Length: 207
Ligand code: ATP
Image 1 (tube, rainbow, N blue to C red):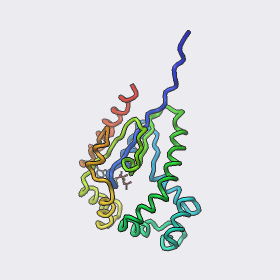
Image 2 (cartoon, rainbow, N blue to C red):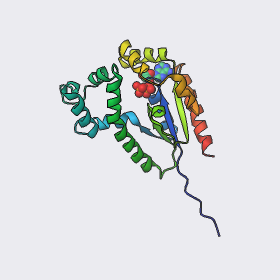
Image 3 (cartoon, protein in one colour):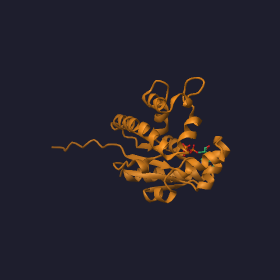
């Protein structure tokens, strides 16, 4: 009698890092190499579209001052409120996190029948206590360089970039939780090599 092989679930790897550290670049690179990606930022944006549950709850709390002329969310207005006041940031997190978690859980179930490694790209992974993953990759970047890139490539003011970074867990705390660290302090060519290294590590986990 042959023993039926148990179906193997795909690996689930968390990907995190500070704002502007290079998470999106890394998750795109891992996707190119064969992973599927669950992107928490994309989920948040979808749930913040007019009429969606997160949008409705945010407008209920902060009123029309967080709306753009077209009736969508004015992200800068929200940032101006929450990144200067930790109580407001807490309130935003209480609105956003439960619904995002729900959607992440739904997508994990959906991808569980496949074989491709699942990358969970979640900026606040360390803070949110995802403990049932097969590993955590942290993209590491010095704060000064993160501020420089956010200002140079993403149109942030220096003050805004600094405020956002100071609201995050400190770099060392994040690295402590990492099973694999991607160093993104050098150029994009070096980052490509780091992504190759990470992909080899992921492939090694499944053997
Ligand atoms: P966010 O926290 O805002 O979601 P992120 O962590 O996803 O950001 P990316 O969007 O991947 O970060 O990178 C931030 C910016 O820095 C992008 O414009 C990206 O092209 C650029 N960038 C990423 N890595 C490097 C690098 N090694 N050298 C130069 N620019 C880089």
